[in-house]
Amino acid sequence: MFIRSAKLAVNRLHILNVVVWSMLALVPQAHSAASNLLPTPPMGWNSWNHFGDKITDRDVRAAADALVSTGMRDLGYRYVNIDDGWQGQRDAQGYIHPNARFPDMQGLADYVHSKGLKLGIYSSPGKTTCAGFAGSLGYEEKDAQTYAEWRIDYLKYDLCSFTSAREFDGIGTSLDKEKRAYEIMGAALAKTKRPIVYGLCQYGIGSVWEWGSSVGGEMWRTTDDIFDNYSRMTSIGFAQAGLTKFGGPGRWNDPDMLEVGNGGMTTDEYKTQMSLWAILAAPLLAGNDLAHMSRETLSILTNRRIIAIDQDPLGRQGDRYHAEGPYEVWTKPLAGGAKAVGLFNRGEANAEMSISLSGLGDRRTVRVIDVWSGEQVPVKRGNCTVRVPKHGVVVLKVG
Ligand code: GLA
Image (tube, rainbow, N blue to C red; front, side, top):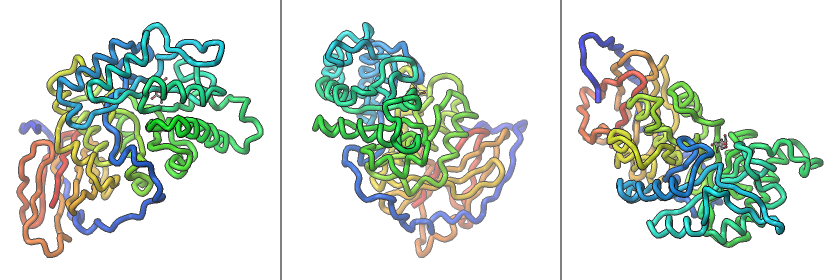
């Protein structure tokens, strides 16, 4: 993973006071009520980051096939989510129909289900979606009913043009209107009696993590859109600090989808996204073309030990523990008392980062595993020192 070369500048960083073990005190969850549809963050695939609004039935079937043939399904990637671009016209009764690229939505759902996967779809509380297709404004119940008839399992509901919805004039502030709009679709989905994951995509406005659950959401985007570059990915990912107590089983903060494999970042940068998202207990929705991916991309998406950190049954979102210049340490408590520790080097040169494992209490022996490689990391005089490539990460499992 790390290329040793005399020519490479190596910074030495000591973060000696990172007490890994003493941070186990449980932070109370903001709400206790949560649906049981998502006991761990959802995993799967979404069409947007690679296919944009040109997505077709064929592409979706190919993604489903690839989830099976690559083994990703069996590692937990279950949702196959169609994003914007599937919508056609409404009929005289107001029911939405897919466009010509999706000739048989129910057939597609049956196909996806036959593979042991689940199908997701996308709409907006506004008149139109972000890409200009028909939104659900005024047709919420009909749309929810249609999704249930097609046997859809997941809805991403994206704010888009809602801000100009005249229909909500007179309902308090713009945030009150948004909450009401999300509540209407939440109620419409509940009325279908079909278990449909409800993902709010409202970019984090008005601290959605504080109220997303109360309008029926199981997850909510906390940020604006991700792009396939390191600067954007890290400005989103590292800004998630402090949201820990709002996430948990049935209520996940969503810093947007994965870009792994889309070509705009290096392997170390993609590993940074995968690692940070796992430590954040974020949804892991691959956003690349699964049918045509490199071995390297597949190996990043399918590292079992990284996935296990994301899917840890405790469901605790990790947080920033320490930062010094471009070097950051993030930690996530795991079930059974172990801890995931991410050492991130956001700098422009390779670095050595050391953490002190003091504070381990009575434990005489502590095992430290490098999560990406699975290898044991030596502990010397209570410290672990690892080399972290520029824009890269080392994730340790301690305990
Ligand atoms: C918004 C969302 C994206 C994607 C597009 C589709 O930008 O944030 O994730 O769904 O709309 O138009």
